Image (cartoon, rainbow, N blue to C red; front, side):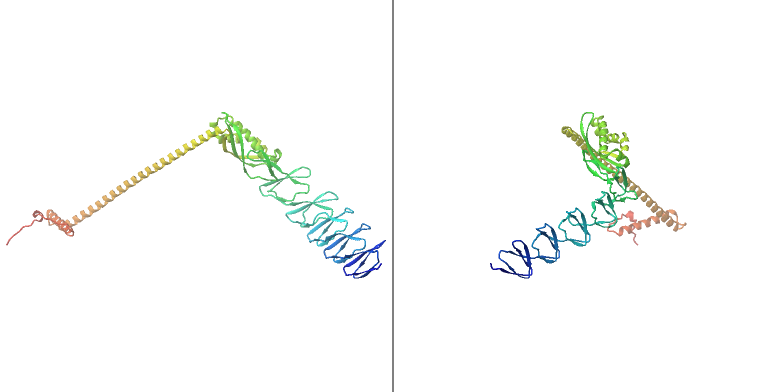
Length: 461
C-alpha cells in the first residue's frame, strides 16, 4: 500500500495505466505512483535533422509523422510504427509519390528533402531529370488524355504529375549513303535519305522506323539480319548451293555477287528480303545452265557459264526489285560425292603439275635463249672491236708511211740536185745502218760483223 516514487531524467517518461485510463509523465521530474498502477519507464526518441517517424494512435488508428530534429515524447496512446529517413533530392532529381487514400499522384523535384506522409508511398525510386539538347528528346504521354508529345526544347526535363515518360529518343543522323524508312500513324511510308536537307531529325511521336529482316549465311537459310538503316553503296555477297551437270555429277558451287541498290523505292515495294531474292533467282538460272553441260565443259569455262546464266539472262527480275548486279564470280567448285571429288582433285593436281612443268620448261628455254642472245651480242661486239682495231692500224700505218716518205723526200731534196740519185740513196742507206747500229748498241745484244758487212781494208805505209 506504500506509493512508489519515480525520478525522471530529461529523456525519460512514465507510461502509467490505472484501472480506467492511461497517461504519461515526461521528465525531468519526479512522480508518485499509487499501488495497483502499472508503471512503465521508457526513453524518448531522438530524431536527427533527416530523421522522422510514423506514429500510430492505437485507439483511433490514425497515423501521423513526426519530423526531426527534436526529442519526441509519445502520448499514452501512441506507438512508433516505423522509423524513416528523409529522401534528399538534388536540383536535377525528382520523385513520384502516390496518396494511397485518394489515389492522387504528385511529383516532387529538388532541391529539397521529402518526408512521406502516412498515407503516401514513393511509386518509383528517385530519378534524374533528362537532359534535352540537340541530340536528345523525350516522348511523354499525358495520363489524362492519353496523347503523346515529343519534348525537344533544351532543358533538364522533369515530368509533371500527369506526364509519363514513354521513351528517350536520340536524333537520327544519316550519312550520305544511308536511307531509312519511316511509317507514320496511318501506315504511310516515308523515305529519308542522307542526301536530303533534313538528314538529321527526331521521329514524331506516332512514327517508327521500319525494320527489315534479310537472309544471311552462306546458304541464305536464316533471316536474322535486322536492318533499320540501309547502305546504298555496292557490296559483296557470298552464296553456295548445289547443282547437277549433264553427265549427272552433283556439284557444290560457291559464287560471289557484287551488287548495289539502284532504286530503293522499287526495292521496298517488291520485296522485304533482297539478298534472298537475288540468290534464289540466280540459283535457278545457274542450275538450268549447268544441267546442259558436262563436267569437263563446265570446268573448262565455268566463269563464262555462270556469267551468262546470271548477267546475260532476263534482268527484269532484278530491275523490278531495284537491284543492280555488277559482277558475279565463281568462288569455289567441289563434287558432293567424295570419290568424284578425289578424282577431280587428282585432275586438278595433274593440271597444276603440267602447268608447273610447262612453266619450268619455258623458264629454262627463256634462260637459254637469253644466254645465246648474250653470246651473239658479245661476238658482234668483238667483231666490231676487231674491225675498229684494223681500221686504226691502217690509219696508223698510212700515217707512218706518209711521214717516212715525206722524211725521205726531204732528205733527198736537201742533198741538192747536183748529186746523182744513186749517190743520194747510198748516203741514205748508210745513215739508216748507222741508226740501226746505235739502236743495237744501246742494249745488251752482241753484234757480229763480217768483212763484207763492214767493208774494211787494211793498208800499210
